[in-house]
Amino acid sequence: MALCQAAVAEAVHVFGKVDILFCCASEAVIGTVEELAVSTRSLTLVRDQFETNFFGPVNIIKAVLPTMRKKMIGHIIILTGITGHLGTPGLGMYCASGWALEGFCDSLAYEIAPFNIKMTVVQPNLEINVLTNRITSAPSLPQYAPEFNPAPLCRTIIGGLLDRLEGADKPEKGQKSLSKLSSAEIVSIYPRLPPQMSTSMLAETINAIAAIGGHENPPARHIVGFEGIASVKEKLKTVSEELEDFIEVSCAVDIDDKEHENEVLDPKAGSTQ
Image 1 (cartoon, rainbow, N blue to C red):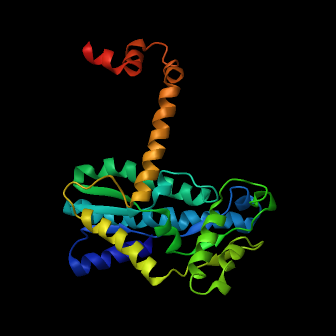
Image 2: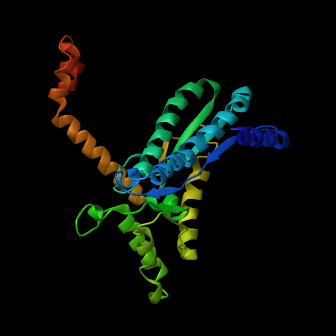
Image 3: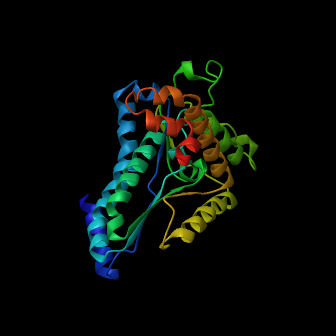
């Protein structure tokens, strides 16, 4: 926290104020919930995941709020991912840290709105935050190997993708990332992406951020890329369908509030009264 306060103080000393705070700290810990609970070292990975992805942004936000509040202006932009909407097998703790940060930001947005401070959560595709930062894999358990568990675990998906990218021009290097991520030891790797792919992903995200940075009325959430939009739409559709399927059961608990129950079950009837 002290380092964050010092960084903000230096920025204010040089520039006079902080107009936009952009938080993009991210590291991914890969492993099923069970794999991350088998040892003290793997449990440390969980704590480290939250220190980087949750407490890091929280600390710098807390450090910058007094100066933004004093100036009555500011825009806080948080880079998370569509994992803030979607659970992903093998990325449970990564998703949990993202959901925690987004819940924090949603609550904070109401608190700082009277001071003219805006809050935006930017959600790019999974590849942006995962493939452009360090990836740490917990030791794999044989019970979650592909031949025993049909769930498409992130370890297999990311490892296979990196192998294809790394082996595109040098086939003899294929399978290295997947084998590393499937190791019986804790392994950390820094993905080596083709320059064109890396440039394209970063440009896509930078354009999205530049479009909303300092905007008078920025969105609370800004989803980047067709894949992310399609995935979130599908998730919201599923949530809406499940809500409708069980709406009568949900409303049944409100025994003494039949008027509002009828409005929920039949919105048209409520609007004609």
